[in-house]
Image 1 (spheres, one colour):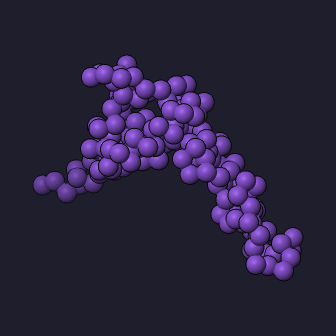
Image 2 (tube, helix red, strand yellow; image 1 turned 90 degrees about the vertical axis):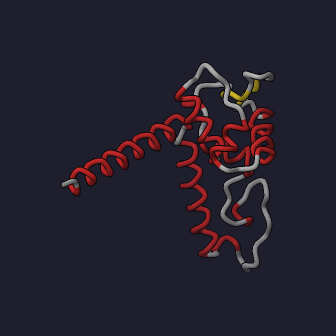
Length: 151
């Protein structure tokens, strides 16, 4: 997810140029081969496209407000299930005598529901905007604290 967010960050600065994986790998200190595997999955799913060549790289196949965090997470990590007995696609029976009355399972079903709603609500654009706004607030707080200590 870090590599994808770095791509969002880099593309927002210069949307006309695809982002190369080597640049993301260098800035995020993640092996380029690992990032390549991630972006191959994203390309196969239609989230990103790639361009070959010296000026090549990856770019988003659709607007960032149409791509949810949930979509990306399912592509990269599979279903968002806190425990196997609440999974629809990867269900595994738990050790409880009765799943329907298991208190832990009831809580995990609610957790899954809320996490899914949150991840599907957040688009990559909204997430990128939130990150940008928090960085600005953090930098402005840092700037104002420096003024206080100047002599």
